[in-house]
Amino acid sequence: MAYRNIICPIDGSELGNKALEEAIYISKATGARLILLHVVEKWYQSAHLVTDSEEWQLIHNDWLKKGRELLDSELVKVKEKGSKDVETVLRDGDAAYEIIATAVESKADLIVMASHRYSPIGKLFMGSVIDNVTKRAPCPVLWVFK
Image (cartoon, rainbow, N blue to C red; front, side):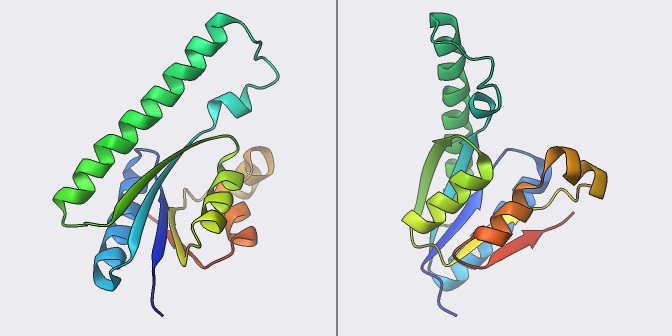
């Protein structure tokens, strides 16, 4: 299969870094564009608390700034490893929804993401982003485990 666009959601975790290594490898081997995606979920998850106050706007802007810094930092690392066609995307919202939306918009051929292996009880109470993405993605999803 010829890959043209690969999405790799990043969160700065150790396991997320392993998924990124796989995405870099596949991207370099196939010549595909690598899209690094970071979703700021905190704003979405705190929607029931959020007001239109200046303080909340400052908090939101700080979360977005930290997300951009993570993407910029990872972009440097990816380019040092020899990837040339790399793009960064910062989204704000529900992680699973934003990953799928980015995949649709970019016509992704593959999503490479880390699986944190939640227990069945953990999935019940927390949900599983990778589960939701896998069920609804417009392309294959490669799960990277520890």
